[in-house]
Amino acid sequence: MTKKVVVNKPNKYNEPKVAAPIKLDLGCGKNKKGADWIGVDVIDFEGVDKVFNIGKAKWPYKDGSVDEVHASHFVEHLLPAERIHFVNELQRVLKFPEYNNAGAMVKGFCTMIVPHWASQRAYGDLTHVWPPVSEFWFYYLDKEWRAVNAPHNLDYKCNLSVTWGYNMHPEIQSRNVEFQQEAMKWKKEACSDIIATISKKV
Image (cartoon, rainbow, N blue to C red):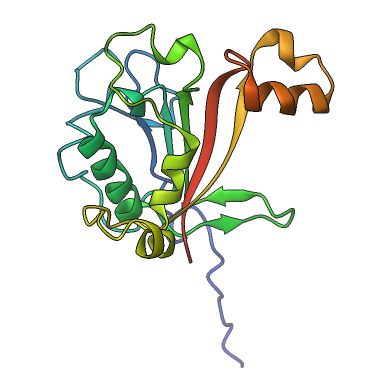
């Protein structure tokens, strides 16, 4: 008589546990992005999950442990040195980017939204810190670019890749692409926000 071999099939009791993605909404205030996000703020608003100073403290996350970061209308409130701390910590905690079959980034990135520097949105709130965030700042986040163009900026430890686009004024959105490009380059109030995607350089 042969012995029957029982194969344990994976089920909810013996499958290895997969950790939930770590998704941080930094500077979330009272409007956390969603239930699956960790809301972070320096003020203990209702709905905030973690309270710490994002621009000064070491973030309480392990190196390379964070799947996604969202920072909407927050970075413009940081002092210049705090912005550098922000990108250095972003470099430390983010996972390297991963892509789906269509080439879209699905893990290991930060979406940062700030008021466009040529919009009154950048200046109307007196808690915004000078200078406003501009696209040229993104070059400083690249280690190789800094080595050639800004070797005096020793406080930066990050090596990040940034792509960006714009949230345009409603009256510009309906115009053709040529008009939009001309307006974005030369006309005040054409762009309301800068929307940047930031990831670690591989």
